[in-house]
Length: 239
Length: 239
DNA sequence: CGCTACGTTGATAGCTTTCAATTCAAGTGG
DNA sequence: CCACTTGAATTGAAAGCTATCAACGTAGCG
Image (tube, rainbow over all chains, first blue to last red; front, side):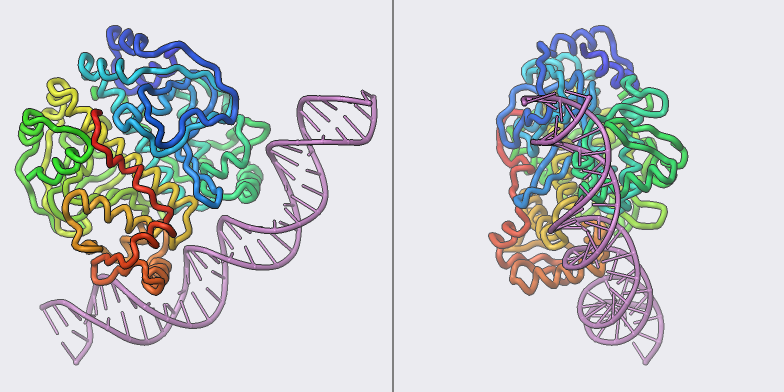
């Protein structure tokens, strides 16, 4: 059940059998949630974190005028709100973008991990630091990249993140979200995302249709996105 | 020396005398660094984290065309790269924006803290999660707020962060950086920041001149920024 | 008294948004 | 099997916010 989470952790550091057991023990029974449902609301008091087993979720905030910014896309294996373990209340909402299966991990058990398995705790800490690194890259996109580069960059990032949990198929992957969802990730309007996708498609770089991303020219895509995977900490080393 | 760091932590949770001692023990001798110096470069292998004692620093990334995005401003008392403890290599550069005094904290000692003082470790973990929360708020600014709201929001955020370490004076604070620096935080050009500052000034909300921010109408400033301090986790509670 | 960094202002260009329509795909019911 | 419905994707035209390019003002300094 926590296999995808383990794949991601194991790509970054050794995980001992005892640590794996502790992690398994911390995760409770899975629950199914329909699409487009806000699972966690900003400000709510939390005593457990949520592990995403299947599906796509996102973190978002919105403004009074209704405009919304998604701050992270979460794929299977992601601990969508591990940061609530220390924050206790989140500053953003979390919703499903597709039907999802999730499982809780009580803060009580996570606390025990932090006391009895310091190395595992550091790995979990690492995971939240990785989220922050992704946030910084998105800031660079939002603040400085053009719409085309920004969109290309997101497709590159997701390729690697899906690859880490064995969810790419050939040069692409399933991403069953709407152009409006994409727009809310990219700080653009849905209309402009549509035009931007058209450019990427016509340049033979990548196609996003019917909820799947097909990368036709990875090198070219990375080039215009100025994509470098370093921020994803893909090295396996003691942490 | 670590007083400002302690002020910030103590605002969020109890810090025991033993924990305080462990923290003091982890921090090495201070060093002075001139302004505009990149102290840490992306990709470099790190075995210590840096505590900012005095001055202003920032994290930034840039694109091939030379445009730069600052992803966080760090004030005195901030651990500017605590996340390098688990990341080991940073995805961004860190530079001084003013003359600074910094002090190192070896990863070795931090590791010991994670093993012997799990609660203190959680507080440090909390600090990095707080950085991520700030990142998310900046993403909302970069992606969805107008130039005026974005600038106003930054001034609100900094007011609270300076207040936490006792560095506000009346309705304002020192912020000895250039409009170009601000532009790199806000995802704007320096020229547009200049015009935006003019609007804020003429509306009687806030003035930024000679490196100091003077807030004339905090309520109005918060209103146009849609500023709510919740993301700064200002509650004192067990973590 | 020039030099230089920073701040200010004006005019113009350009990317993205807005507003509106139209097309497409998929599901529902007659 | 085919209208009807609905959400999503496309496309066009116009408006708007921000960037660009350039010039000029200001203040600190050797």
